[in-house]
Image 1 (cartoon, rainbow, N blue to C red):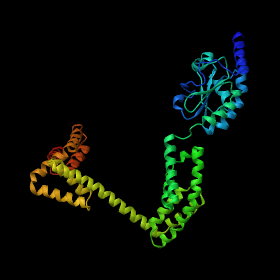
Image 2 (image 1 turned 120 degrees about the vertical axis):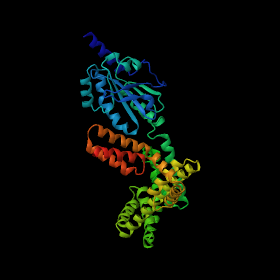
Image 3 (image 1 turned 90 degrees about the vertical axis):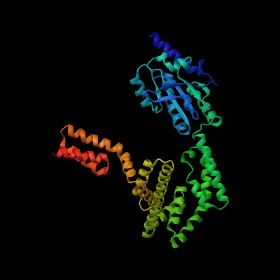
Image 4 (image 1 turned 45 degrees about the vertical axis):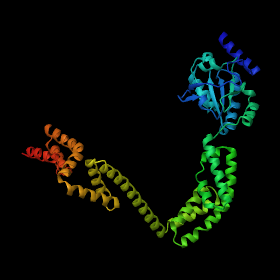
Length: 412
């Protein structure tokens, strides 16, 4: 009874005064790091950019529970605007704490260690009693401490003078530069360039109120310019310039989401993509792009092979030329590589045999070893199959010869 009376006295005192003489004060660097009751890590120093409200409470504290609806209201009002509430429970009954939290609508993270007044975090920041709240600014410094019933004015002041940063500063800076460029292109009547840039503006930047307002204004200006851009699509189609028309429509559709001009562009794009002529043009463009990519890879491989030859690493060069001639047949690089292979073979047939032997060494040895292991284990069918694969994959090498000899013995 004496302990219970002490608890009630502490709660009542805090409720009446709303002030604390704790170890955390306005202007302090807020430092708390812990795991929530469900195991999630919390570190105030990694939450810079947000307003954080740390709430010390307990289910057995009458004034705390009296403030529960108020805390829920605060969370609903400011939760989407950059305020994060963190609950620190001084309860000793975990199940009850979780039950009351859920019933009260506490959707924010909770800390619990079951130590009551000896709670680890309370001992760091504790005051005369609970409920006790600490408001931490976006820079990580304490802005206010006291009873939650008196926090409303402090929150209003914080959002006015210490607003949270809802967007990563770098993302916001980059997005702002894009808007500057877009407005510049609108001014010079480069609607196409402006639409392309708008499609690159990160959606996350719009979480910043000022940026969102400016972006909306820029979109409105651009919609007029994009309308003129849309009118240029039909002449492109009439001229058979389907790829340019498709590109133009995609830029408008993706760059101006939610606007009427975007809806019109999407409809026209759908109609255009259904045309056989458009499909044929896209297929041809894809084929051309694939061929260009294949030629690029072939040329890069040929450069490496030629460097090996220049460095007199002929075994490696010959293997590379052979691979290029086979893999990139029909390309200019493939033809050049085939000519180099032929030159090597005509110059020194013995070299070719040695080169093939060297190139096959690693894989052939491994395959032959597997075949021999099968043979020793009495797995004849598997051994035969593996020997035959060595003969087929590495013709003209000593490994193929060995495989043929051992296969003959195995058959007998």
